[in-house]
Length: 456
Image (tube, rainbow, N blue to C red; front, side, top):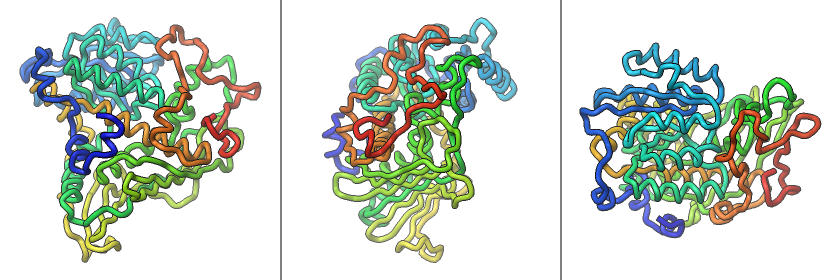
């Protein structure tokens, strides 16, 4: 799918394609299947053993009703995270965790060693900071492995272009790829998207999203001696744009993605503001508040507000407004969504049209149910391009705030600033960091209006 085709397609085409597979059934049928059937054992390697990776591995192992599945290898750059993850997963899924010390790997090449323990058709979980996603995805494709990768999957234009190409390579090998935008697998949101598509609340005229909470992802100046600078940054990856896209990309991609899903297209441009407040001696690259006006090709506006400040009003929700009514896409968090539609725009209970029954299936589990089913039944399934598009659109809003001017989809996609080139060439844990601190231990941060063409 080209960028132009994606923006020019109908809402029905977008919603249909966004629901799951990007590969064609004909292409899949032409390639000999390498995927385990329902009775064969799927082996899993976990790469990135923090909380998200450990959670993803647990959700993967919870699909055992679909067929046997076992965790056989793990990798990280931090030994304490790896050991903690092993312990946690053994406690929750003892019979399915077979990761002896010789299959617990440390270092920048540990991902290769973990994937080398798998056979074609097994699953690699990529849950490291997203800067490393393209590096590890490349190796997984080379090895013929199915992949689950956490979001975001890119942090800038050059890595997004790279991910688009890798998504095509995965299709050619009939590999199944899941991306951790689990809201797309929420059964309630699926029904809501269908109801919106069928005109229940009319044509969408406004979308709103909010992610407002306390301080997040701040860090102090780097002090040499305690650990290498690159490990310092990786351990605080939300603080650095090269590693994660910053707190904006990592936290907000879900709501930007889910609202664009409801709209049926990606925004074509972003205009934004943001700033830093009460920073003290912090050294991270984030703003403390962001307000983004996204615009879709038909002129419809999507307003997104994010704030990470103490003692301020909080909100974590998403809404859409149509010509006949409105809908709640997210209520207080990612799950339960408690999606519902209303007549009018007051969200008054007396105007309720429909609400998804509670309790609702956990989307973190359902994304794994869907991926494993595609693997075992050899169904076309590749979310990599869609995940890269969601990541790029999120970065577009972040960049607009950081440079102080409107940024279009094409501008950020074709921008030449790759935050961390050559990550595939890292060797030792004291390799030079992609970003270096100044003499005061602090890092360059966005300066809208002064740094107009680069975020730092």
